Length: 112
Image (cartoon, rainbow, N blue to C red; front, side, top):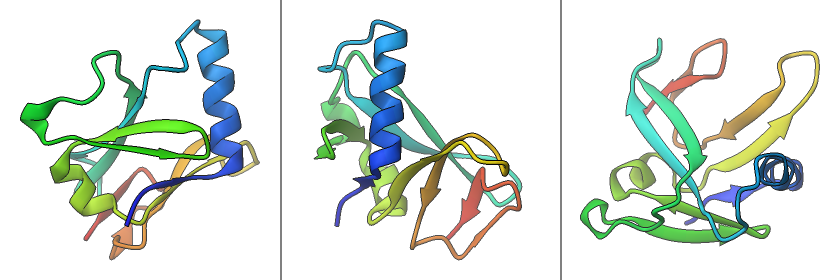
């Protein structure tokens, strides 16, 4: 299992890179932290350092986007799709996680 990136998310990631002069070689770190109303919250950000052996990071790539995920987070989000929407229900990145047993109404946190 891996993490997939939708076409819309890949397009927006490329736009953000261009707007902020971030190299295409800089991977996007995807992670999970405790918090939110359902217990776990997603985190995404560009990571200049890339793969960190001490985190047992996994390097992944989908749709032209390089991703880095620490092993603990990967256990929660394997099989997840990263998507982007700009509709009336809120602009931003969204995770479609088949492992989530419930999510909060705002979609920012989840539980397994």
